[in-house]
Length: 488
Image (cartoon, rainbow, N blue to C red; front, top):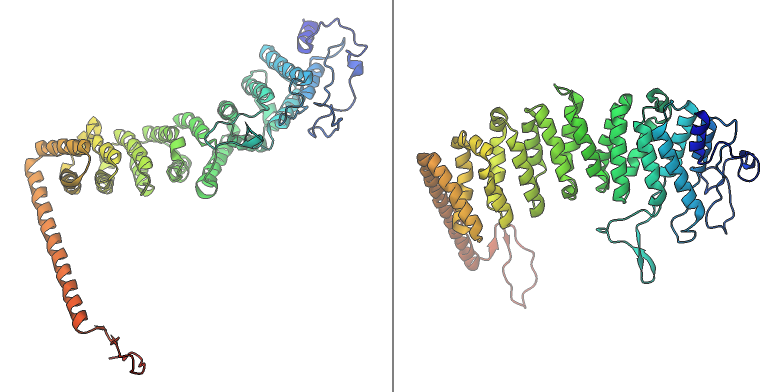
């Protein structure tokens, strides 16, 4: 059985000879050469660095075979050019990586500390790198890629299997958590989080799964992971304004937040207020808004009192000139209000509906229409109807202006429907609001007329007496000497 397992690791029969070019005797005593990963050098005229031959021999232990395979996988290849694209050594490394994936899945005995250390080192050599530039083939060679085009890392041919092996390593029951934690420390996790800024969506998707598994298995590293992710959010909001992996991080933390115990710790509430809510500020919020909304609603599910905090945060970062972003905020606001209870709603309904009234009068018809559709939500309509004495006086002037002045017919129709809802709800209050609105319009018209008369009076006086306050600027004849303005 033992010889069979070694044979499976090596890919050959355990009876194969140990001598000759294919045996262990031919392996170099030093690590294989690479592009600097192991400190060696190789002929630059070759298309790819040489790989040592992997073969089993009588007397080799399971650990020896495993370590030699891992050593082979530490050799790096240059995928930035077409030289050596069909190199057999590239394909050989991929096959060795796939054999390690199979062996780790079939293993029954725990990995030794040396095997765990070698695996983590191999992951670091292959994954932790400087990202290649985004290029695409052009007429004259390589050209800069468009920002909207997806970018695919040319080294994904190997990286895909490395990530598969890393996921298998993290989830495998034969990997002792206590041993793995010695090597997959906070520094390793921090560099793994940095990879989420990759331009390749396939790599970010793999990292999302790996990070979620690490968070679930390495419990002692959870506080560090939360702090490191918070720092990524802080830098994104305050400094960089660009990060490719915000959506993936939020997707991971959506699952993490759902596992928080009740009542929520103060640390978790601060994460909501200081890390999640400020993510509404960047102009690229549309790239990750669904994941962000899910995280926020998970917090409200855990503690409904936080809905008031979330609504005040939305009002704080409400867009001023970006209509598309304003529509997204209205959609998220509706989801939050569906989870809001009456006490929290009453605390923030005045500033909330002042903002809604502003949206109702937006010249962008989609913003106005989206704000009016809030009344179609049954839970929100119930909250409004039970507090219409406060809400209707705030919202009525906006409804009246829409009914008189808005250019879009669809907005006019929905506005009239909302007015009818309030009329059916409290006719007396609606008529009182209408009367008050008319009185305010009359006052405003009188104020504007008074202001116009004052300006006309000033203009007449200026024509008769060309003097501004206490400085005289009388026009002098050409023959008269220049005299400084007189102060009176």
